[in-house]
Length: 123
Image (cartoon, rainbow, N blue to C red):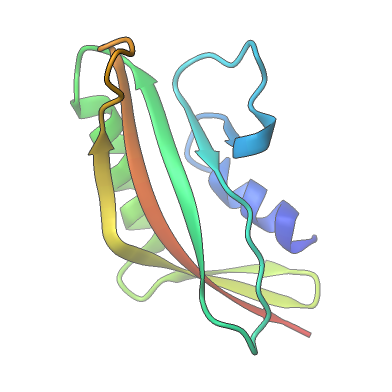
């Protein structure tokens, strides 16, 4: 599987749909995850994947729980995901997650901005 497909599969492993930032369908329903796709090779610096978790709810608990699920999946030492020609090592970024409020938007929309660092070990 390509590195892009491996990241897509990982992002979609949390029980809600995940889309690349540039590919969110017009009819997407909450909750969902968006992420940017970056790639480096082992000779370049670590890459940062920006992930957003989106919910439409009155509660902060649901988006917080989803972010905690991601935190646990990556783990303290990170997690590796296999791909064609190597692997991708995902690690918790710093800061891990932030609550984002968009002024003037629907107050029911809850967004969490998550930082994931990725090292690509590709042949």
